[in-house]
Amino acid sequence: MIKEQEEKRADSSETRDGTVKLRNPHIELFDQDILYHIALGSKSHDLVEMFGDVKFVCMGGTPKRMETSAHYIMEEIGYKIPTGTTLMDISQHSYRYSIYKVGPVISVSHGIGSSSIGVLLHEMIKLMYHAKAEDPIFFRIGTCGGLGLEPGTVVISDDAMNGLGNHYYSLPILGKVLKRPVKLDKKLVRELKALVAQDDPYDTTTGTTMCAEDFYEGQGRIDGAFCDYTEVEKQEYLKSLVTQGVKNIEMESVPFSALTHQAGIKAAIVCVTILNRLKGDQIAVPKEVITQYQQRLQILATRYIKKYLQTKDSSCLLKGSFAVESP
Ligand SMILES: O=P(O)(O)O[C@H]1O[C@H](CO)[C@@H](O)[C@H]1O
Ligand SMILES: O=c1cc[nH]c(=O)[nH]1
Image (tube, rainbow, N blue to C red; front, side, top):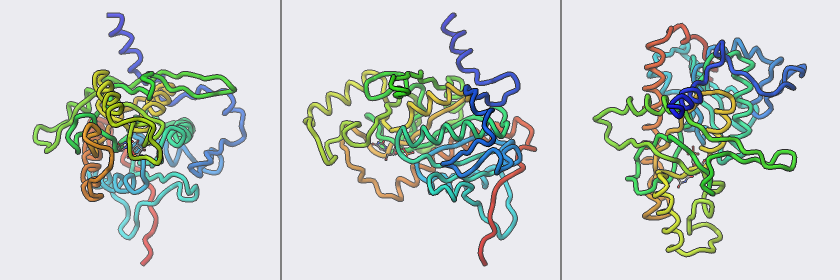
């Protein structure tokens, strides 16, 4: 009972008026808050006008995936931009991350690994705060290595842990290690699972995601530039992960789930396996197949977004960002 209550409380991302609260008293004292890596600022841009309607922030590793995803969402939610214009990368002048906006949905790339997504999360959370966006939900849609799963399987994370099996995000701050607990919204996991269609031609499962600090040795691969362990030791390690309920390995789940939880933002991670790590390390799947696999993530996230928009006031389908196409 107590556990249930705790879960309910922890699952609730809602602050009293739904806007994102910052746990940083300094920001309010600045003349302007410069969101350096996304090339936006609280004074240089009207962030409320630009992003006040945001309900979803979808993140994924590559700019191309997030641009494609924005186009897919645009099609699916029936969002129109003027003929002769195209979606534009709002943070193009940062040369770091790419941000697309389609009505109430932001689609943004986060690069590889904890520090890259960590920096972006600070700035996206602050962006939501400055924009006064209400109850935004964050999704990470990514690729991963599966453990005993058929390539192309979709994994909805219900927990995340680091390479030491810890369910917290540790970061050295002022010379001391700060640990922030990992927490994903259980209700959101259930809602996403409920959107899996019986005739989806692939499996969708839930489980713990391991977040590695590296693609090669950090994930126990034997195909990096260095390797000080044997194939047998690697297999033992991967099997021990399976016994801990780990379904997949990627590189951002821990900071993503810890920092969104810290900000009181509901968040979910949906990844597609591009290989079965119990069978090998090299990614031999053709790029076109990986692109098809990635569409499965867009499909699931978009089902959720559409359902949300159908049940809420569709007037949030208002503002986007587009650029005029050159003739
Ligand atoms: O496909 P993305 O979202 O980049 O996610 C996975 O792929 C990258 C490694 O190839 C890491 O970022 C990992 O988390
Ligand atoms: O094995 C994999 C595949 C994609 N991304 C990862 O981090 N690991």
